[in-house]
Amino acid sequence: MSVEISKKPAGKNSNAIVAAVCLAFFTGMIGMAYAAVPLYKMFCQATGYGGTTQRVEKQYAGRVLDREITVRFDANIAGVPWEFQPVQRAMTMKIGETVQAHYQATNKFDRPVTGRATFNVQPELAGPYFNKVECFCFTDTSLKPGETLDMPVLFYVDPDIVNVPELKDVKTITLSYTMFPVEKNKPVASSEPVQGTSKTVSDTEANLGG
Image 1 (cartoon, rainbow, N blue to C red):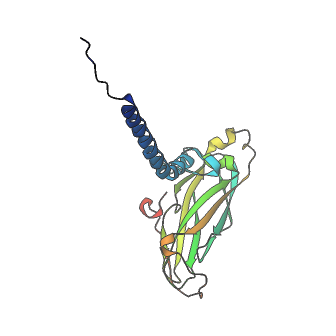
Image 2 (cartoon, rainbow, N blue to C red; image 1 turned 30 degrees about the vertical axis):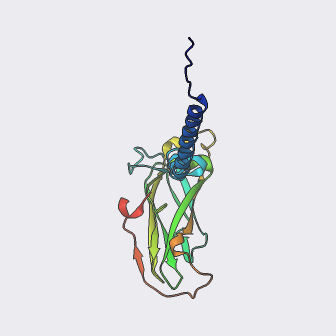
Image 3 (cartoon, rainbow, N blue to C red; image 1 turned 180 degrees about the vertical axis):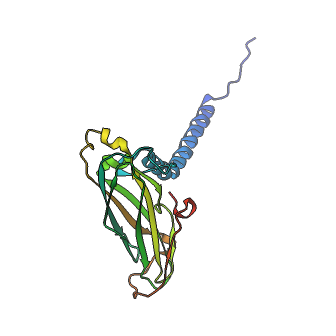
């Protein structure tokens, strides 16, 4: 007497495994997409990639060289109705010396506007050696109509820059900021200039951001 053994089709199990793997892959890709921007920002700030300056905790380089370097300051706007410029166009200091520069922004629109600044350094190879101690970059800044804001930047140039063959003879570095509007306060096409007051952002970590 023969006994027939019933076997369940293996196809259903295989399909379930494939579906689970695809779902996990799809979920992982979504997570990576959301994480890409902050991770890229952290990578640039840590390495100086693409001329991005580094953020440091210590306020001093530890040594100051008997050699000067000039830092030029540049400001641009991209769709935000502000006047945005450095208070002074250039500053000469010793390599390793901690100094403070100032930018200034004025809202020329007739309602509050929020902006956010990005930055880079030229030449790009100097990015890892341009160390910001305090800065207003990547921080949402809101200005009332006509309001003027003082925006300080505290920084130093790492003395190790002279050990880089491509940078050992560099005498000038350019720090450039571009101010973008934050979409929740997207301005309309035109507005009338307004008069207003001014204020200064205090030089604290909480106010200045990364």
